[in-house]
Image (cartoon, rainbow, N blue to C red; front, side, top):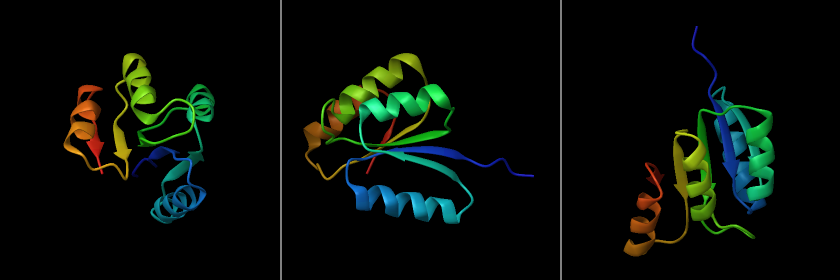
Length: 102
């Protein structure tokens, strides 16, 4: 039997959160979707996740700050979701720790 993957989505865009949650759920994944860093911290306190999908441009603490904070506490895989495409954004993101930037 295959274990169900648990994914945390952090994105302030309601439509993107809902789209990702619905799509990943169709494949049997357990998905929690939140809008900001505070809700992300609360979700991480309540449960464990196999992957975090993290938007770079969030209100309050941005995704890079949240990534650095999470990386200091955990080696959970992080997939960065962003509309930013500049090379420097990718370099800064990669220096925050291992992740995939989309």
